Length: 229
Image 1 (cartoon, rainbow, N blue to C red):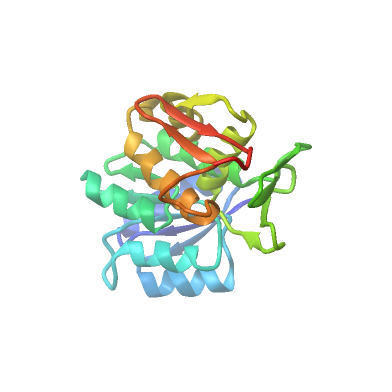
Image 2: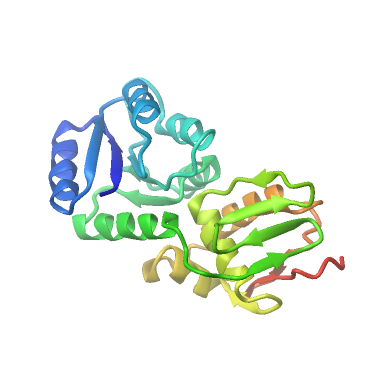
């Protein structure tokens, strides 16, 4: 059973989501404002969070930022705001996915399953080493050369894992979008720009001159584990 936090000021929607998620075996925690959401999350850390942006006491992005400060749990933003800048702000704050209202329950449940899969422990996998960090794909752990751990969000991890399993190979934008977000998002290249920029800030010695996570303009990305510049 997975514990899912749902944050929305629409009580009818909260009720509908509680029924749908509970029917699929999840434990559901509900909150109608930011203060309650953060209190609930600190007391009972969720395995996944679904967060609305338009809350009575704060913008939902503040919840995303607060959660991301101490947990890598998958976060799905569910909002009536549909502009690209808003989506980018939410993703840059640490959200892993973004669904606009109105939405279909089937799609939301599919996104929940995908988020939980990405956060689930992986099976046996190799260790990938670079001159600056080491990726243990089985343990889902990244450490710097000095042994300190690098924390990634589930979506950042999923992207890195795909690239690391294909070293020195071009991985197209469409393939990454399909694998991480689904077939309906194969044109949402802004998702990749945001999350790859975050990965570079965390992993690259000089994010402005990527050594390991290289862009192939107009095509996709390439993971180059070789330490050569």
